[in-house]
Length: 439
Image (cartoon, rainbow, N blue to C red; front, side, top):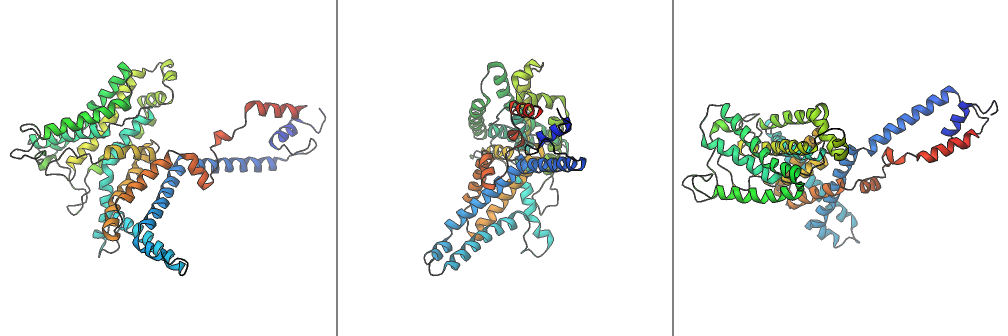
């Protein structure tokens, strides 16, 4: 090897294939190259990360929703009839339809500027948080299952049992304030955990797939709760022929957080605490480490000494407890006149969407639930003010799931770089390159 072909220059050739053996690289150049590489790597991680993919999936779904709004608007249809003579009218009608719809969505979910004062104007935001409260708890439950490699699709049944248990404690006993509320909430959490734990035990002891088991348990829970609500002496209100429970005692109802003019209750504070707890569980506790290890590779976790079967049971118990908490919130929140078998209101399935959008991260789930609460709260205003069908909101939610499940599509639409791991050269290619340089 000649003097000009020093090891340092050889390394430079590895970094820069276009360099010649006699070229020299100064320390400043190496530092600038390293800085550029680190900056470029950090930028690539940001724009190709899961959080950005989730945000762009929401943006793309909103764009698709805007197209649907324009296609179904009668004014746009009328203006498009003479598009070639006055095209500006069509574009103006499209803008009016889309901006009016999304403007109403904002005013119905964040702040209503038409209200005379701040107290009334902020009411839509409190409605958003109120709708999001059970979604946060249920989404956290589904996310815990996802992190352990389990798909808990039984949110409906677990919410029904949680609501039924909390409701029964709420109307069957007249207990002191505070104690009554806590016992009703604890009953809902315990009922959800036990109903979900059945799926965990069957998974651990018999190998039954949790998706099939939880789907079947949804039907069992629905018809069982419907029977209890239709049977006198069980959950049915005395003197009533309707499948509905009695009203709960006031001591078992969550207090309003901001006063009687708002529907937001202390349940929102409870789900914030639950988000902190789940974050600590998954990221700071040994049990959470076992959850994540089993989720990554059950066989490797078993070799490492983790009891995989017991882990499945613990995962489903915690997942069901969180979803049961969502069910308890449904009856202890603003519903004081009794509940029916439709108390879950589809939240058990919406929780799956929230967990997917939040990438199964506790705080990601929290903000995803806030978004879905805003869509639900604003959707009613959008329908009432602009005449936009509420089904458009359901389409947007479905499209969010579709785009979340297809990251390559998002990267292709927005021309995002591939994740860093996919861009690393093969080890054999790098070794061959070094061998050529050394010769």
